[in-house]
Length: 253
Image 1 (cartoon, helix red, strand yellow):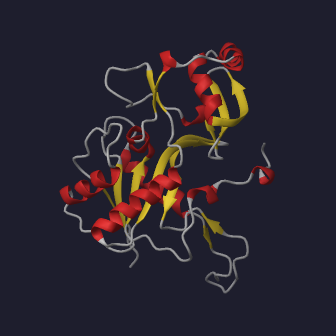
Image 2: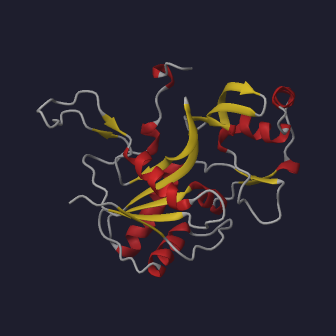
């Protein structure tokens, strides 16, 4: 019988710059009385990766460019925050009052370049949080540290909340992955009636990230790390960048 078990790790401290996320993961597993097995997956909210990597920015230290000031007039948004969006993005895709959609430097299209105001740090509304510089590398580093200490072949996914074109509501997606086929190729498999799949790719890391996000919550939950047991995959690992549709293949530029 197929079964997938997700457990939010307890007693996760407030993360600050320089903290070792792998150590926090291992301490959380100990608190949850979970002994790692080969094939387990650790899903981590991007927010605590960003904090540990020092991606907190104080808005009063940001000087808006002329382009940021123009977009601020057009959108009624803070020009300093827009400046950060421009720095974090390769392209501005859409603009309207209260919203800017960009193509992030990591490749995906999202609102406000993934810049976050919530749960940045206590008593500091002037601070915002940027996404990690290289989430795939961060996932690989954590995976390596966990494996070194436990000897177990685990996978690590870094998840972030994103909106979706033509759909309401945010879901969790993988922006970093290591030790797992983030994009799994199902071509060549056969369905119940023997039909061979010819075009089917599965966003495995996104599926697991979204499931874990249900346990992360979006407000005061304080559970940014989830242990997953029972996930099954085939094929060689690839990273989260493989999930980004190339711009030349995008039918909705």
